[in-house]
Length: 310
Image (cartoon, rainbow, N blue to C red; front, side):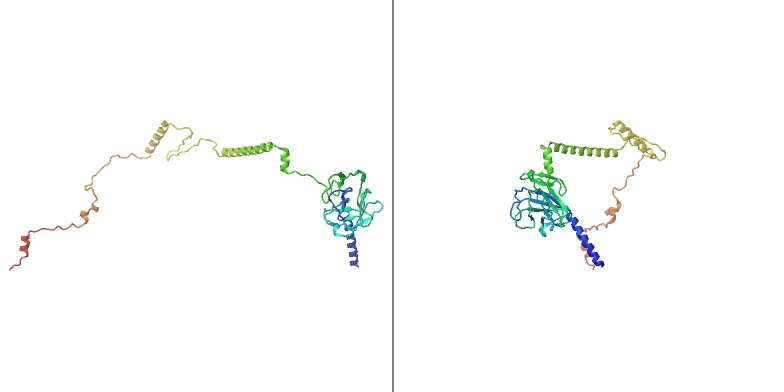
């Protein structure tokens, strides 16, 4: 029992969803006197209507009705076919041709009655309708909504089959600039101004950075402390050149100051002459054995000295 109730509930819910989803189909554009290049699947040039799916899911509009008669809402029923599937926010063209040939996207209706309606498969609920006067529509004119699926109807000379009716001509940036400034004077001024502003900014930045690092006072005080006496002397460093007289005075003062740091000493120098002008330790006379000298004797003395004694 529970399964039967669940099945019936799902069936009713699915039927409700299907019915509500089909309500999202709208007549978006109509061409009652078409004489352009668009040819229907039967090979004829015929009036056509453009249907628009306002939902976010794809829909197959097979089994719904199209009519050109207010008293007969079931005049023509679209067959079940994949050719009648409309994608989310998509478009579909239905041709109006009274010939006896059959095609899923060709309806046997007339564009001269001044009435078109889209009816759900129950044959009672009108989803969308269009009332117009065929005599007021000239050859080459079209009826289209200002906004796809919701806008008011208006006569236009531009047809947009399978495209959005919101057609706007968008200009590129180059075209806009060329239109506003054909000679390029404005662009040149803008570029020059940007460069000047950047240079001024960099100048101010570096100027204040240097000003922060620069000493606030140009004079420096140097404290000189003596061991016995504590005193301070201010030395002012100026950028001007110091004269020679000032330098001489400073040198004299420093000389006297350095002399006062030492005791007075005897300036007599005693010079003692060394007896020998060389160092004895390196003299060969004292370190090496003298070479023996050879004595030369007369021959007579040598003979007598060597003669044997009898």
